View 1 (cartoon, protein in one colour):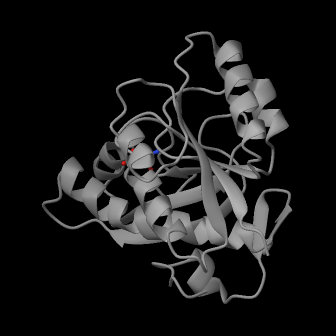
View 2 (view 1 turned 90 degrees about the vertical axis):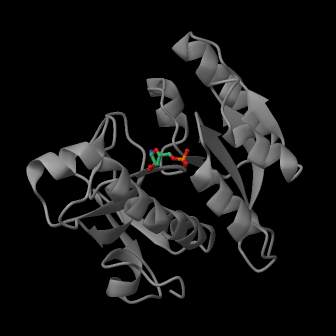
Length: 215
Ligand code: GRF
């Protein structure tokens, strides 16, 4: 079966991009990265793509519609079937979101719908929650909303500061994003309203505590 072509949009460090690159290095993984787009010329993540010979594009147009049009062209020319936002820090044009509905996903470092937007780890610490984590969801117009594909839970430990909690969540992100992309690539996700069912796995492994990589 041909592998799903993945387009990844980044703005910065690109550690989630790296997790996807590493997953796709296994020929048995059902997706391959066909294009990386950064809206910032200085994003360290760009080098992660070029080092592996993956097409990397800088599209830094400040105009939202122009950015969307140029990105759309790159993604279509690369034959992309799924767009993954990975630390992508720009609000997307409504028409771009509509054009990629149900074919664009995002990862966010909280258990959505708790703590959307900026500094979710700081928000979690301020709220005093005992668990936080990360969420992969289909993208809809409002920021950090959309049907949830998978979540991973991590504990908040007494004495955590923002960096310590962020690092613990990030380690879970690096497992969760490749898992969610794999479920999509294997055609196992069915969206019904705000809910996503994943065929062929047990619920705790797919969408509850610290998902197994072996769903
Ligand atoms: C991650 O925590 C991701 O969930 C959030 O932004 C951060 C990006 O990190 N959306 P990286 O660029 O993937 O290292």
